[in-house]
Amino acid sequence: MSKENLKDQEAQQQEKINRTVSKTEQFFNENKRTIWTAVAAVVVVFLGILGYNQFIYQPKAQEAQEQMYHAESSFASSEYEIALNGDGNNLGFAEIANQYGKKAGAAVYLYAGVCELNLGNFDSAIQYLKKYNGKDEILAARALACIGDAYVGLEDYSSALDYFGKAASAADNVYAATYLLKAGAVCEEMGDPQKALTYYKTIKDKYPQSVEGYDVDKYISRIESKQ
Image (cartoon, rainbow, N blue to C red; front, side, top):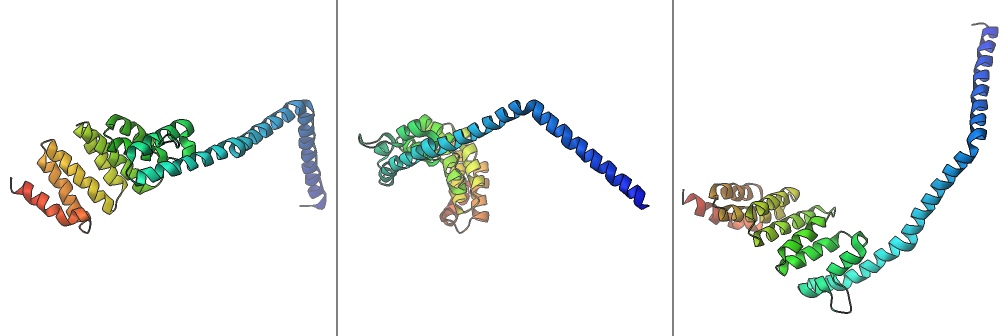
C-alpha cells in the first residue's frame, strides 16, 4: 500500500471520528437539560438509599438485635411463653417480628415458630416457620421439620410426611436420620408400614452412625415380623 493511500485512509478515519464527536456534542447540547436531570435523579436515589440504610435501617436492625437478646435468653431457658410474648419490659419474638420484620433477622421467625409449636399453637407455628428463609442448611432443615411436627399436631399426616421428607433432603447429614424416623412414624400412623420400612432402611443404610441408626433395627424387625 502506498504512503498516499495510507494517508488517505487515516484522513478518512479522522474525519469519521470528528463527525462522531460532533454528533455527540450536538446531541448533548440539545439534550443537556434532560441528561443532567436524569443524572441528578440517579444521584438523589443513590443518596436516599444510602441515607435510609445508614440512618434508618441499621439503627432499627441494631435495636431489634438488642430486643432479640432478652427473648433468646428466655428461649434458652425453655420459657416459651415469655420468649414469644415478652415479659412486660422486653419484647418477645412475636412483637419483634411484627415491629421490625426482616430487620430482626430471619431467625426471629424460626424462634417464634418453635415457641408456638411448644405452646401447642400449631397453625401459628406453621405461619411463622414458613416465613423463615435463613441460609444455614441445618436450620433450614430444622424449620421444615418443625412444620412437619406442627402438621402432626394438627393430625394432617400427609402434609407432615411431605415436610419431613423435605427436611431430610435439605440436611443430608446425621440430622436427616431424625427426620427420616419421623417420616417412618407418620407412615405407620397412616397405615402404610411398607413405606415406613423404606424410611427406616434408609437410616440403616445411609446413617448407621447416627443415634437413630443404632436403634432402627427394632423398627425394621417389628414391621418385617408382621409380613
